[in-house]
Length: 445
Image (cartoon, rainbow, N blue to C red):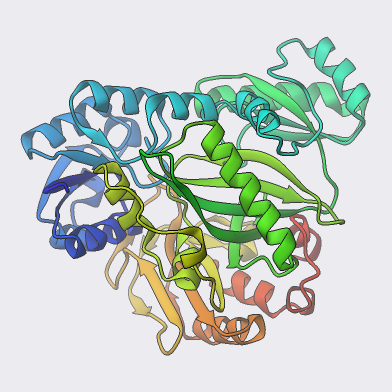
């Protein structure tokens, strides 16, 4: 096992990883930008190193600075969290060359699954259904237009490298295809440094369901069941839950086994999330593999009782997963709401500023993952997510009731947050009846 790990990230995920490290008897090194020098979680780290000014490019995305911080603190491994460098194949390669363990997948698996077009090909090899679309990257607009006609509208134009809803556009006909194609390529280039895109058939009224997996160096891969991430705004997840409420046990087993086939086909090691969409008939289609821990991992931890961050660390240290699939049980229903510093009443515009009043929720079945407190300044330099509120109860009805109660208790002022938006969604009769799809938020709010 490692003696010291550096965490190359910021915010709540840093505190989450620090806690896992300390429970494993490992020292944790935090890095921070000048904007985060007063972050409360830094006091819990065994060491803290400043890596640059507020701009992410000069701090959290600055590979030489992060590697230097690892070297001067004698850190044996780096945990990237999510976002920033978590899925950067160059960073993974540099860690390897510097003799620092990257707590994530190996270089080849990162490279293979990082290109969504290649990942689709691998899924086909693993006999997993994929959404009808192009066989790979489509560079020429006229060629893409012919393919769109062949696939059938509406089609989705998607960035081959990246995710999070960036580099993604919908075309409903030949008339708006050209502008959508150009916009997707431009956004993909700006966000990921690559304008490569591919085409997929747009599945109408889908659900977004993902499977959590962990694989070790011996070829053993296990799933920790699925999460439903259907509640989204502009392709950004807002609310997640586990289990997916529309799947029966047979359908759940088929979905999870399909995810494992892809992971084994890619010779993947460490934690990953295999993402699918479900159509109205509950037929699933593979869309991508996220090669990191996910923001929404707590809902899986709550229903399975397994600490996924600890599993990541153990696997990276070379420990085999001494666990059989049948030993992983799924109990209760967990729901997570992402709390962002945004104003829902003003088109979700960012709402930075100082938090002068902060009252966290609590009580039975409530978990709060956050890095903020009273007096904390929410910066404009980074992602607006400031907390994750998670609840668990025996049934979905009970979990919804607990989440409503917890959201009403949660006070963050004077900045605006998505707490009221999450409460409105959770309270909607169609959410309670489970009649939702990925367009639910846009249609109803």
